[in-house]
Image (tube, rainbow, N blue to C red; front, side):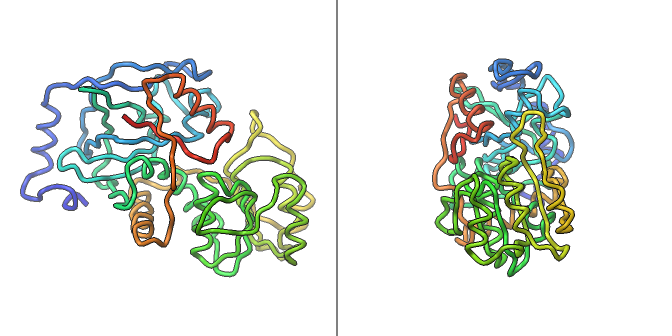
Length: 350
């Protein structure tokens, strides 16, 4: 609530008007006028956001780079409108009192301007956030690490909690467990008491059996004595071969849940073994981060922050900090996350 962030003796409206009447400050941002390729992205001067009722300014210190940011720029997400400043994640300071906050989600970076606007010298970057949605970042993480994880962890929470409803005792396969969403999902599944099998993992707190991406899932599950006993499949990678290999191992009692959040093919298609699917009576769901509203996102982030600070969950050990004035680095980071070339996430920093 607002009382957590500002002096209650000062009215929000008076501060909002004061900020709106303040001289317009110029800042820089990465912006694309049309979609098609990363070459459409350029560094431009823009005006500081003007607040609407119920909003607060956040000075962004780090903005995570996500696959959806890259996909929006190249035009594979048809709902992205232009011209647009991309960027969904942020960690920074609430402008009035400097409270450290983090956030993600909503239509930011898709149909409203996002967080990709670097600080440099006297040029600042800000994003307008609903006050009711402000969440304090984990005190144990710096801005770069906090800004790298908000959307992946939100997606992981939606996947594990809302869509797959992972429970204690479930056997879970995560395809792409070293990625941002997959590694977060592995921790959340373990917290719930599930047994996890991942195609890759590098987490200290989650050490499931790991196996090569191709031609090994059936063998690994059979060796573990769990053929036809996998309850949940979380596909965070989007390749047809491991996906079909994994659904072959799932339970046939009608309770198996499959959640898909990525497809590697450019056209979004890959073949699915429907015989395995229907003979096992599986349920398939797609993950969409915007199914949660701003207040629901805040609740998730507040809970994650407490668990990270308590040591129950583990934030990233390292991130790749990208100076967004260097367009070659910008494009390289976007291409890297689009092709999943690295398990270390990149963030925009001053």
